[in-house]
Image (cartoon, rainbow, N blue to C red; front, side):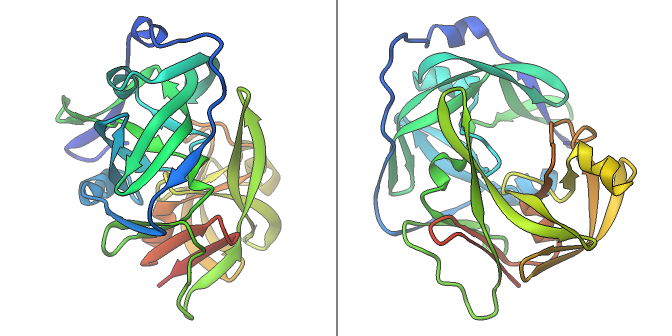
Length: 303
């Protein structure tokens, strides 16, 4: 993703360093969450991050006692760690996982368990994680200035209500259902269950209508930008070109208009049978807050 001054680039990392973390016959950990019912976390880097990647919320965390910055990303199959933070925090890896597509390249990955993750006063234990073999680096005029440590994924977000506040650049995590204002628009939110490399995971889905066609499964991705992603098979089915502007998307009572869209292939990722709607789409449409309430099964958008 480019801006005039900044670029985000993936760089290779030593797989030998990662494979030193592999431990055979490791028992499956149980995810536990402790802490208060409501926690508000400022996204200190949001102003800069959203200039490069609209809709992004970066939050401070602690990984096995080491400070780290995570992107809140419901589109991540598992909480995902950079190789640098995995090595520094001595993450417990259990096995090689399937390669994933990053910017059009097949990239080796590993799975394991994170003993302890702190997000403000919330404490997560036994978090299943995916570790990449590439490091995401922010560069200023081609010079590395900062590295992203990870993505807080659907595990453990699925056990919370998560509110992205675009105006105040904060993230609210709740262990109880969200209480929306009367003016909020909503849609039913469900989790499409799946298993990935032996670990249970899920994808947040809302049934939607795209220019009157549907219902189609719309994948709500808090780590996604301001461009809608269209499943490659749907591009042909809908008779669209690689680049397209969608006049209207209806997600329950939530309406999005005149949204730019590209195919999954053009965006460098595999998408089949779904419409990917990122956090940046809602921000670009003028919404002040977006809530994925996994406890109540609701998506709320507030102007």
